[in-house]
Length: 104
Image (cartoon, rainbow, N blue to C red; front, side):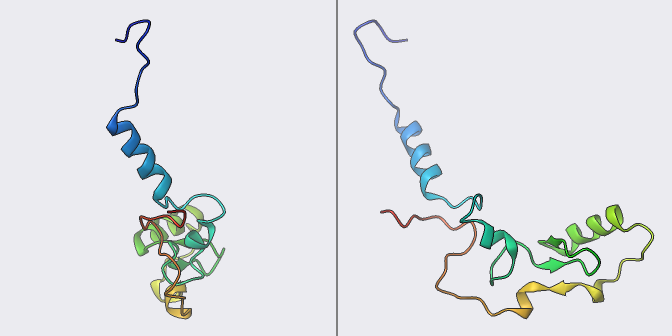
């Protein structure tokens, strides 16, 4: 606890956490939209449902989606669209969840 005349200072842990939050791509907002969409190589969405065009990052998530949204239709892995195989992405763009900032 600080006294009246002593201003409270920022700790090294607090400053480090602020720097980490500012420089790490969490995949949110307008900048993270391309990462989440899966249209570019390295996006979060890998598979696309052939019935409703919803995307999922892996096969297990797609099975969960299919059981919840299309319970009367049997799940067929062969009918899924692989978005990463169908597009050739730009390797110069940053990958999702990569640490770093352009503002340094």
